[in-house]
Amino acid sequence: MKDQLLARIEDRSAVISVVGLGYVGLPLSLEFARAGFHVIGYDVSQRVVDALNSGVSHIQDVSDAMLAELVDSGHFEATTDEGRLVEADAISIAVPTPLSKTRDPDMSYVHSAVEAVARNSHKGLLIVLESTTYPGTTREIMLPKLEECGLVAGEDVFLAFSPERVDPGNAIWHTKNTPKVVGGLTPACTETATALYQSCIDTVVPVSCTETAELVKLLENTFRAVNIGLVNEMAIVCDLLGVDVWEVIDAAATKPFGFMKFTPGPGIGGHCIPLDPHYLAWKMRTLNYKTRFIDLASEINSKMPDLVAEKVARALNDDQKSVNGSHILVLGVAYKKNIDDMRESPALDVIRLLEERGATVEFHDPFVASFREGSEVRHGIELTDDALRAADAVVIVTDHDGVDYQQVVDQASLVVDTRNMVQATHQSRARVVSLAGPPAQRGVAPVGTRAAADRPAAVQHA
Ligand code: SAJ
Image 1 (cartoon, rainbow, N blue to C red):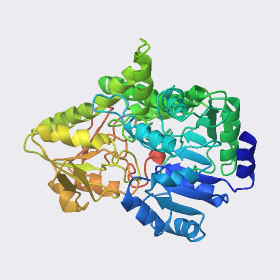
Image 2 (tube, helix red, strand yellow):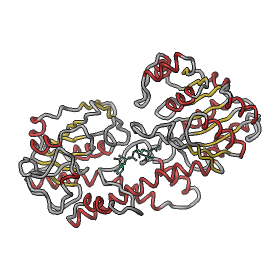
Image 3 (cartoon, helix red, strand yellow):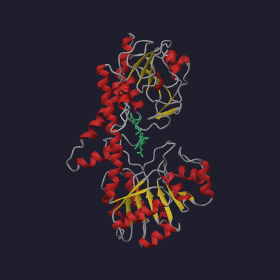
Image 4 (tube, rainbow, N blue to C red):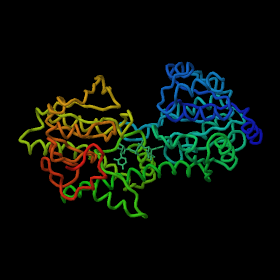
């Protein structure tokens, strides 16, 4: 079975299926198609499937032209018919693994996908799970479903885990040139999965088993969550001491070894960093172990929106204003700079906390015109001088590049800056309050500020 599969991968006669055509599955599908395979993309959304088959991409990193070319050449087709999976020699599963309301893993998408694959499985099939999940998932969820079909892993079917490392909007790293870790249930599983990905990805990194591959991803993103939590705690420390935390971090970052720069902010968002570590924490709780770094980082990171709201309240108070009744303009609502993704965005928490205190909050985001919150759709406003002057406080939450920060400090009366994007200048109107730094005065750069050369071009010291 293994040799037949390896031969079909080698001569590209293997049919590949990808289950889940989102920001992971669609780019992966097209890399397989580009490598010469016939790819059957499977998704439960008829809207997504119809759009893809007509050459329209719903994924920022996949252009319509790229998609249309592979659809027209017959290398890629999308379907909602799970029965088509029976045609596949290899299947990659890239479905969501969110957290439930109680911050526990929501494996429902994985279960559905694995059951659909099992219903259409056959001897000689390779199945690779890519969704970020707790260690043990491949062995504990995927393997039994295939064994129920009378298939023996490592002989009849080959099972592996390969973490997705897609960073949407990243101009440098994308599916083909990002090293791909692959771990199989058996050596034959690792060998076949490695051969599959080597057909279209520049660097493949085989590891000894599925748990290793599952943990690699969790270490990568837990590393980020913990280090972001560390710098957010440093921000709290610096705020209490009246020291510019960004100056501290920038100076520490001059160390050419043994240090890696992270920056504080209003909290963490996205579909990875706030969620992935909880998959590991949950698994370890079942083994009676408390992952204290993960829990502490989560506690600090999830408290940052409250700290921002408190900072705004204190800054308004210094202007003899209360939050209640104030008009606040939030600059940037996406979860990180220069993208339109709102998932888990801390801006949503900041807005909610300010409105709970009685503020009227509007937002401007060059990448997000509007977003849905429950049954309500919130629309952004244009960043005009009038809008800035009308605000009792302007809160910089997302550090998009496409904002004229000079205009902001020239027109606003109070700016609460959670991303170190602006500094008051002598000719500016704004009093700038940093997330973590020395007390701000109107129009005077705080003592010990970073060199002007480091500042965004728009805001230079007089
Ligand atoms: N954040 C900080 N301070 C930092 C870095 C990030 O507050 O120093 C915040 C961001 O504003 C954002 C959140 O954390 O709200 C997550 O930011 P991120 O830079 O980690 O971006 P993500 O969530 O898109 O993470 C993805 C991850 N990629 C995958 O899981 C495949 C992550 O592993 C990447 O390292 C990251 O992109 C990246 O480097 O862009």
